Length: 429
Length: 59
Image (cartoon, rainbow over the protein chains, first blue to last red):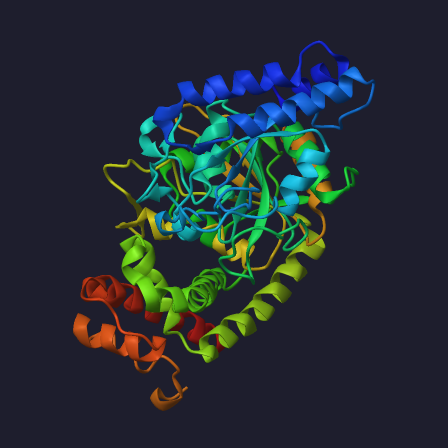
């Protein structure tokens, strides 16, 4: 059932929040092989569900997410639990004193937290290959990655364990797993959703967002988090070519061609300097992530997953001048994008070059050369989040493995973008 | 930008892994455990490549 359906049924009294929570807990137990869930919060979930049912019994409205079970990526503070950020070394860290602000808002709207979800260690990766909690499997083909770093969130939604989940996106970590698992996601305008109580990675780029099974659920939960469920309008659409048309698999080439036809063949436009935008995002990430972790790396480097550790250490050596140059380039690229979006407020680009990579072959081809998927799946997502723009990750109705596109808006156009995607793309998702 | 102005001049991509990792350690300000050397060197080369792209775009 969708979040809309569950909330409507709970509010109408035709089902109970407890029954929905128990059903979600049973689905989570049955789906354990996916390695999407890291901690099951049965006691908390049933207590929250009972509180919702008590409100209904008193004739009160529990809110727009009444009794809807959900999960959160393992970097949100959950009162009474260690915030692991996907790191085995933090498994026994002091417990969070309070819920993250996003969880508080969802609870106030009646939602029921049932689990925490797997991720790449410290969110530094695109595959959810976690040294402590394992590799999250793609529900559409367990031999393949779910994508990352919010892979547990995407897999949990795709497998129907929960109707929505929270993730975070610094360089593509909501958009990539959403697309590889065939669900909807939103990376909001930078800092437009609350980051309080979320373990940081790269302050300049970090955002939280929702992943859901439908555009309607995405808009519903985003509205609760944002405190604004309004609907707005946005303007004409174009498809991003150039960099975004290179490196595509045959399946993605076909899917993009089909999407263009369904949209009436909108113009294909290009923006200069995308490769440099991706490189600058790469450097910002390495610098800020590396410098944030430097004191911990100096004390206990061997407590990290080696694949995360070595990236962070290299980043810790980057001097301030590199960070400053990356930010200077961002201003250049932002001006180009603003000029483009003055004409075309909605831009569409592929999220990923092709279907989810096989776990047995963790590479993607770039210019014909196999490159590690963990670091390179962000080829098309990094240049966009670099600018802090809102992006809806939309699954495409394609045969075979899931594929997805980014629907990119102007800063602050989040609600308009959600409405546009739900309306205009309903026949292609 | 001359070599002396290049903030990543200390990362010589042609250097041996151990030399490159030692340069990273010096600039990061902490000693590297032995097992980190190949991975740190590979990531340092990658960052050097990305820096070259950004530097060219700003030139």
